[in-house]
Amino acid sequence: MTRLDLLTEAAAEMDSKNAEVSDASDSEKSQKPAVKPGMISDVKNLYPGKPDNCGRSTWVDKYPDDLEEAAETAETGRYALLIRNKKCYDGRKKLQIDSIVVQSPLLKKALGSILKDYPGITTTLERLTFGAPFKPFVHRWSKLVDAVKNEEDPEIKAHLDLFYKTLEVELHDSIKARDDFILNGVITYDTCWMIFEPGSIVFTTENGHKSAVRLVEGKYQCGGAYELDCRIVDWDGENFGWDSTRLQIREFHGTAKITKLSAFPLEYHPAIDRVREDLIQRGKIFESLHGYHYKHYQGIAIGRGPWGCVKYNVDSRIIIDTYAWNRFNPNRQVSLSSLGKAKKPTPTRGEDSDDDEDEEYNYDYDEDVSDDGHDAFEDARCGGPRDEKTLASLTEDQLLLCKTSLKGYSLKDKKWRMNFLLKKGAAN
Image 1 (cartoon, one colour):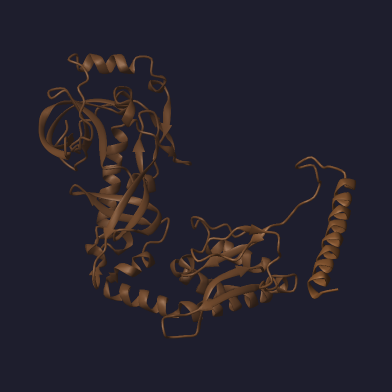
Image 2 (image 1 turned 180 degrees about the vertical axis):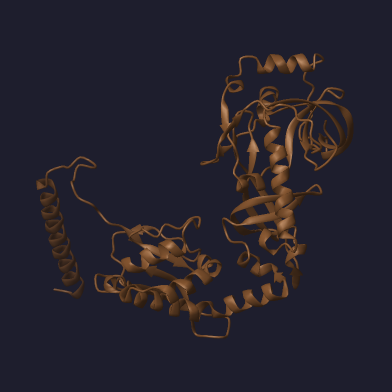
């Protein structure tokens, strides 16, 4: 038998064996019961496959072989704090803290009083995590220091000491820089957040008028601006409430005087007592002009033109009425959130006063209403339920935060305006 014949015979035997194996496999598959899609009561885990040159990967059922064991276990759960560290690239140290997980119930209780009313913080959570740069503790550092000094319970004090020492090492440079800036009355753009504590009162000016707002949150925006999300007291035609407003501090180089910023914490104002009193007095004017008022106004008003806000000289009778504003301007209705607690009740429909205190007004929306003027407002208000009800008077803190403007309508120009309040002589 030749070599070619032997190879041919071997190949035939191989094909025969493969055919037998294939028949056996098909037989086994045919013996398995058919299962409808989705009817197996179990889970099938899939994992990302090896990424291609573009970084894309498909799902595979092979378990990854490069995984580390989970770091947070029952063993780590026994510790008061979990410190997550990461590489530091500022050239001053090898590692820096990325975040801290507070697991101690005693420490959570102590932090509850230190961070009381700090927006976005709930210290009763089972998993309480703080991330760098630890803004709440930069803002409340003095309270943390006082809590450590004054704590009498030895066990709570031990946990507080541990937390303080951990943060002190991490925040030492930031706290020192903040104190140095404040001592010199200056700040840098990158460290603006250090002086703006959520919940604090922020002073600013709006078209030359002093204003105070309550800060909710500050954050850096793309394009070079530190944006302050704030709240201010306004009137919606039926109730006083919180309105939202946003302020911006444009990016600057080097240091800048804190009091020269477009907005800064009221506590840094050199004449804080006088400014506070002025704002409260203007807030009382704002409160007295809620409801419906028929006045004569002389002064600068701001209306809306084709390219934005435009200033106008106004010398005419006006009607102050936010309720009618909402009726005639449905696309620009005033919508407010509740103020919460307030003081004694005061009538909703205010009487025109004869005092010397005065208002100037800013107009925000131009729209013809009616040639009937005053009669149109009476029709708009007809049947309004709020004419009989009473409101709670604003607290002193709320008067401080009242808006600088009220909605009004110029009878001469037949245009809606938003009228700025002044201290003397514009409206009678």
